[in-house]
Image (cartoon, rainbow, N blue to C red; front, side, top):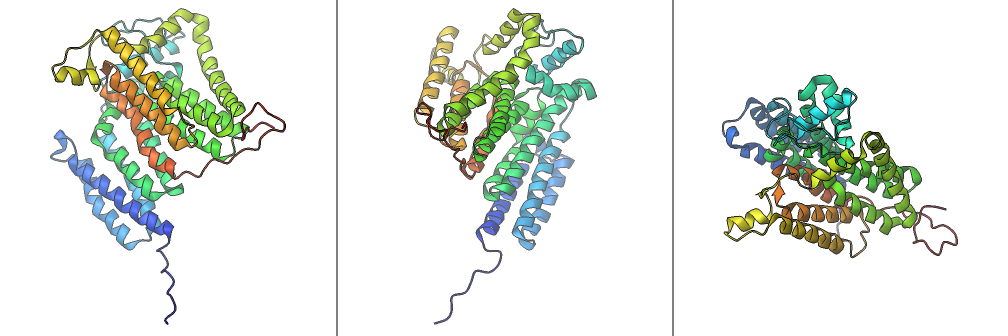
Length: 415
């Protein structure tokens, strides 16, 4: 009987993963390039360059080693995603007033004034307060200093580049098969490109929320040691400090810390997050605490009409009578809390479960609100796309329980 042949080199699991990921990534990116948008039915020069490069990358997938081809494809996808956004960049964007208000707020800050308690001429309608926490201003400050309002808008392209770079890094470290299709989708999905450029701030918020998710996963992988746990808490605070709509993602990440490592780990996470938020808030609380709190509370609802992607617009489209705005708000709050209770009813033992749970509650929040801008989905997009990668993330390393700690859960990192 003939001896069983050994598999040929290059057919191991890693090479197969790289080969499949490369083909999936190229396929998704190529189809989205050809889909384009209404104005791209005749392609822009930048889009056409990417289309012409596609067969070259496909040839590389055929001729080069699987992992080399996967790495080249990742670079092509990141570069292509940035090129598509830069091709349409016309400054800070005017479709949304968010970056206009951010620019005006940073101007006040640079003049030594509090951006809270000010009536903004650039808001729509004029006179709205500043509803965003301080991290929003800090993230856009470097761009504002370098290039004024155009720099504030360019910050959103940088944020998209950070998201794509993280996807490429995760693909290389965890799974090309899971990472390259996610990267290709984020890079070329036309509406995500538009939301990078329309003057909204949800692309940058999504980038910081993604960092919060990955920092928590990294802390678990490092046995919930003090320093990684502090970094995770700071990243969660940064997400909350960007925009209040990240609240439920951060809450489910905190629940994961508790379920995986116990009360003391949760305390360390919350303490790090609270310390950063307090440090950033203190100057504005000292100047005018009422204006600061009122401004942040205005995020809950400055609009007074039914608009966007939500159940109320659906009901109106079906000809159903709509309740008063107060009742819609009550339904929104009740549905969101019910979703939060439902997803946390069982322990969130992995970061993938925590991210998915946070995503579910955030979507319930958005889809039951009476005013839901399409731009908000730029926040949830990177969290949705990273889920397959999180599913391949190595499990958290349990920490050693402290001796004689009857009131603590197993896995508490404090000794």
